[in-house]
Image (cartoon, rainbow, N blue to C red; front, side, top):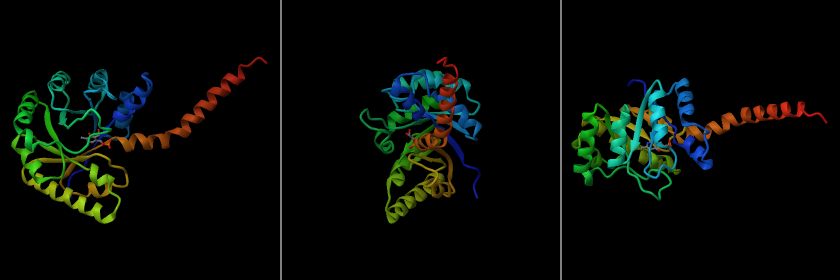
Length: 248
Ligand code: PXP
């Protein structure tokens, strides 16, 4: 039995909803504080180069106001390295980024960019920030992650989450189990995330090496189900308050 898994709540999609109207709510910082109240161990944000959801001011406000820790996901580009060194998050997780993608598609190809990733990792670590790489459950990428000096890898559970056929799910799960064992044997800490829900997370949380999970989209989408009734009740009350003020 391993130690308790740390849950990092990704609040990107709270910002997605705000950016749909370019307004001030919902505020990802408020969501981060609520997630902490509910027991989250940390907050994750992905500052994308296109700023489609999280904005620079969100990163600094969240960093300054949360009582847990911030995991900053970002591409390995100079602009983001500067922001990370300024913000001083607890951890930087490097992810691949393509402008046209809907969400992060697949893990980083660490193997073919070892030199560049090592340089970025060294700068991050020499500023006292933990350095993690988001990779597919592929031993070659995991070995490369160790070679570039990462402290941890986050195994991409995106494919596992999308598969529906039971045999295929089991095969992908086996890959994740093997990759987790392999990474731990290399001295890497093992995290996981992408596409996890409270149904498919169970088998992932059973993998003994996994220490940390990053979960966002499903939490934000389930919050709509859990919160909409109360929001509608509040709106009806407000409308009734207005009706009570009518003079004719
Ligand atoms: N881990 C990484 C590296 C990600 O890019 C994302 C999505 O931003 C997540 C975890 C969380 O995935 P989801 O929003 O599907 O829970």
